[in-house]
Every structure is written in C-alpha cells, then in structure tokens.
Image (cartoon, rainbow, N blue to C red; front, side, top):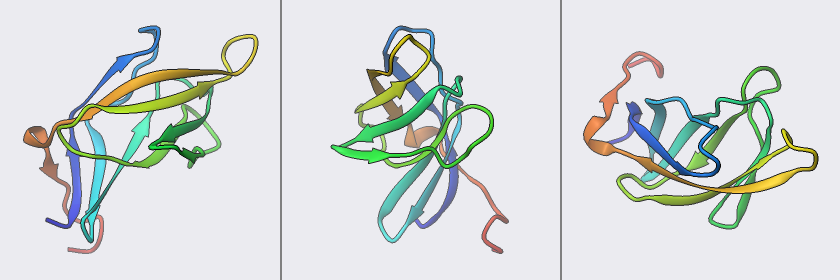
Length: 110
C-alpha cells in the first residue's frame, strides 16, 4: 500500500568496512518503491542502480541517496567512493526486507 515505511536493509559485498543505516526509510507511491540509503561514510559521490546514476541528496554528513528499490530481492548496486587515492566504484548488494516493514505515520499529514 502507498505510504512511508521503515524496513530492515542488509548490505553485502564491498570491502566490509562500509555500512548502511538500518532500518531505512522506504516510500511506496503509485506502485513505485523508493528507499533512502544512508551510508556510514561521507565519501560516496554517486550510486548506480540498474544502469542509472544517482547523486547524493545531501551536502553535509554521511552520503545519503534516494534510489528505486525492490523488496525481498538482492539488488546489485555500485557506490563510487572517493575515500581512496582515486575514485573507486565498489559493487554491493542491498536487500530490503518487507517482513520487517513498519508504517511511519504522520509524515504526509495522515
């Protein structure tokens, strides 16, 4: 159903040093599912999801991205980090778990 939720997310791949905040905010609207991914580092300058490049939605603090997601399906994503001597694309897997989703009320006036 349309609405704002929080759902557990697991991160795989990469070097094992990066993490993402869990639960993540997930918004369902008109059949489209978007999640807000908050990395444990401010050094991600873009993400690639299904061949589409997404830029961070914030300028301060850890890197935050709003990306389209599928629930209960491991998604291949790429995060470009500038923490190393040169920018480096790192492959990750994100899985958003619908069985952990809880609705967040009040954000859209309902």
